[in-house]
Image (cartoon, rainbow, N blue to C red; front, side, top):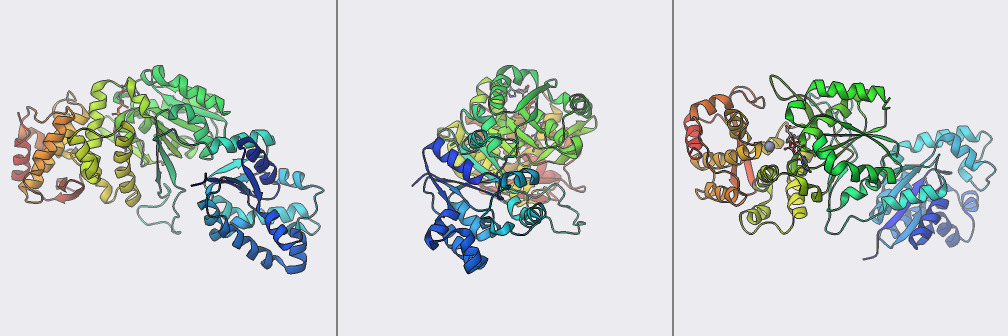
Length: 542
Ligand SMILES: NC(=O)c1ccc[n+]([C@@H]2O[C@H](COP(=O)([O-])OP(=O)(O)OC[C@H]3O[C@@H](n4cnc5c(N)ncnc54)[C@H](O)[C@@H]3O)[C@@H](O)[C@H]2O)c1
Ligand SMILES: [Zn+2]
């Protein structure tokens, strides 16, 4: 198949044609201006078509041409700003490759168009007013295009470079997941007056070597270069901040690194407050980006700060632990702990982009990696049976594919249930038992180890309730063994049951458990008798 097209669109005067030509030259591709094609076919200029045949004739020809342009053909295409107002045209052009909407300030547009004739839509005496009116009419259509490039301050060459950066391919073997979700303001209590429309989807990119592309990837996601607050901790910074900062600088970002101390103990309001103070000191402004590079602790904390600083600034996740690559970095749950419990204060803040580079895991301690494998196994049991077979057998074909398969399960659940009112709770598989065991051990058990034990207990509970075949718990046990995760632990059953009662995720007063029905299918059960829970716990007690 031919390479994807690069389609530039946007209002008059935003530079579609000049920038498009420069991109085509830079990439040695053919350049096609849709207006020129229409004029050539009609044997007269666009102005003449408007004058002699009327705008509807022009629009009809344009619509036909857009349909012809559906297929990737390795072209650089300039599409008139009027063409993409119709979603049918827009979708057809977008299907052929990457579409970028060029933007410019009204003043810049007026200046760039000064003295130009042959602009049929700008006839009349008050051009600035006409431009403002058309811009307002088309704002919604332009907003629907995920990628934008502001060209007011850019030379043609610089703008072309940005577009070329947006078009780069993922490193070989990489995966691209997309997550569609609802805005944070979509009211879960249904008190909003207007139905909320979904947010533009965001990409979750998983590829070895991605860290070197971070700058370009941000541009590709439509984030404007400028100042960027990089939130991390000293452990992660030592290994990975250098590469990240270089990649950001190379694309015109001005990263400033903010370190907070390492560890869950610092995922607090106090640490958030320190970040606010430091952002205030450096005058981090609205629209300037917060980028988290670290594990789930950094992601949750930085995301919470990004959600609340100036009532929300754009946020990007660069997860560096296995747990955060397959779970914490996606789905928009951010927050901090209180002395009275974990994650009690938070928000839904969807990142603009998640960039997972498995190469970063090389520096992770083995025990942390293993702990993350428990969450991979969890995803497999919930919704990726093939991945489960790989984990229980010879292992997945690659780290990248393992992460992508596990992440995909979470993406599907988040899309179905962005605010965790239903099926997203499935992600708690093994966690009701697991949290209690973690507490019981006074955190000498790692989260992943406790969750692994919890998943075995959940499978045993399911079997005890007659909800799955009797062999299932054995298969889960076997997989945890394969991953070097514990299969038994020494504890007091009654104490652990007591501790389960203090889980904040409990709805009402009955205990709820996610249990597997088979590999790849789970369900939520409640009103489970203490006897059944005791019996399940007894099977993981040493
Ligand atoms: N938001 C969500 O949906 C969600 C989901 C699951 C978990 N979480 C949260 O995630 C947190 C746990 O995350 P975690 O397991 O990633 O722990 P973590 O962030 O504490 O990271 C574990 C340790 O590894 C270090 N580290 C991270 N990346 C490294 C790297 N590449 N090389 C070397 N060292 C590295 C960290 O500095 C830390 O010491 C918890 O606070 C939990 O509440 C959130
Ligand atoms: Zn977990």
